[in-house]
Image (cartoon, rainbow over all chains, first blue to last red; front, side, top):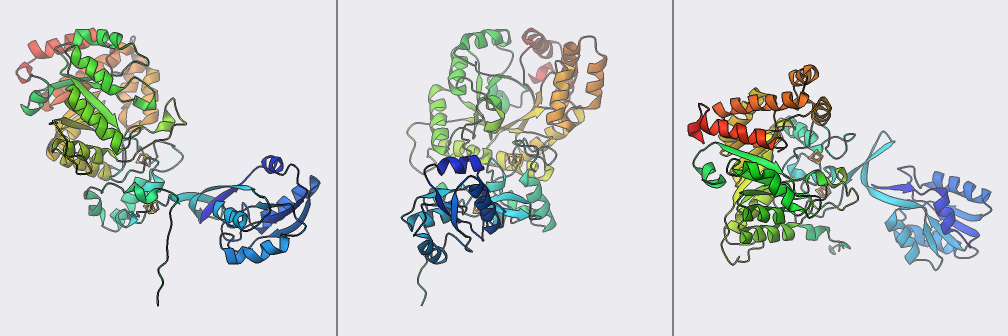
Length: 214
Length: 295
Ligand code: SF4
Ligand code: SF4
């Protein structure tokens, strides 16, 4: 899932200068899951803004703000009587809103990464969408995203006691890869030299075209 | 015999490490190593070591050549993509810099430009492959290289890093890719030095054991904080008791150096503070030690 972080109220207020009537959009798919921009947080933001003297005319949180069908109707509903939209959806969802309304749109979140959820509380980056997935060779664990150096041939010399050289509060992911591959008795896959990565596949903006099937 | 000839002929090798200046005053670096001329076989020139900005290692390597020293150019994957790495390797070859030591590099955030964008387009194994591809007369993209290149390629190994099994697999990949010598992180234990020596030899490269004299208890504790298993308790205890910790630290690694001489192929001094002492020690090894025939 895409992980977002809600911006401080002060920053949101700065962007709201000159406006009074507001619609708030959350996203029940991504932002809600990481508790930084679903319906609950949208309602909290509504309260805070009302205390600041704003008029919140609508709060919505569709399940999937980056899907046009999900937002087109709610967008039509707010078109009248509203001066600005605050989106708590990820960068993609917010842009879908912006491309489909004449109202100004400001974001209430920063989009962080593609991550995984632990205990509903922690979110860790798992994938940088490198476009050329290699995790079949690394025990299903990604060294491209989870090693700060994106090393593909094994750990660096800074991997001490299971901790990463870059930040000792995070594990060196190669320990997890080794553990997993040893368990699967598949360690030999790492004896092959890894091919040079094709970073063209990570050059943005990227596009996927779904082929028609008959 | 120069460094690469000694490597090929099985002679005992002594290398030392220097950093380019934090500025343009390369002359003082050259002056500092003058007493080691003709004694240390080659000098590693670090590449913005610990992600701290320094003068280009390639430029410093050229100064060493001009002043009659044999440089080992260190090159890391941190600051250059495959275009810049190949470009620097071509430049090194053209300048006559023959020895290279290729490594991943410390991460940007650990140095004095922590906001820099790290590169890591390729890793150390792949950088060794690149050097070998250039030697074969081609660029990585298959285009022909005009002119001949020949490198003596080395790499690094940290026996205290983990996971052990993957570190060893990676070491082997480096050697299979074309590293002919391996310089290690500092070792303070003869047994570890011997194990590493055997491992590297078994994989088919020349081991050069890294030695870094510890100057104070503070430095020892710092090293221990980075890498607990690398600093033995007896070294800490010795430093605590010593009247002159710097001398103790020096004597300690000289003892290890003597031991390595018995079973090993080379020593890499990672700090040239005691230049004159180092020169004297090498004189002793060459002339009066029972192993002098190996030099
Ligand atoms: S290899 Fe690339 S695509 Fe696969 S998980 Fe890692 S970053 Fe994502
Ligand atoms: S310690 Fe491990 S995770 Fe950290 S940079 Fe080195 S290889 Fe990558």
